[in-house]
Length: 131
Image (cartoon, rainbow, N blue to C red; front, side, top):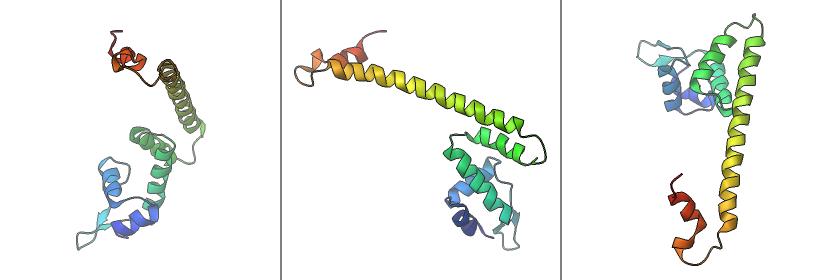
């Protein structure tokens, strides 16, 4: 199949297919005599895997590792579970940091009357003060 069909079936833009090829997430396809790339049906599954993993927050490097693990389906699932567990921990850490940032910004909003001279704004003061 050609790149356009692959992209449509996998639900990604053509540029994404090329990008994933360059980054080793998709094997380099064979070329037809005309020079067109010739993709295999398994490439659709692989692209869908990458797309879903990205939607779950995995980086391209992590996805490459997940793909390597998935290439050995007869092996133990423990390592794959550990990767997913580490990602959940990372997400929890990011959520905690975002909650902290949100609380700080909300405190500034609560302190700001929303009118008056700008130089008296607690938000501006907090942003311009030295730490």
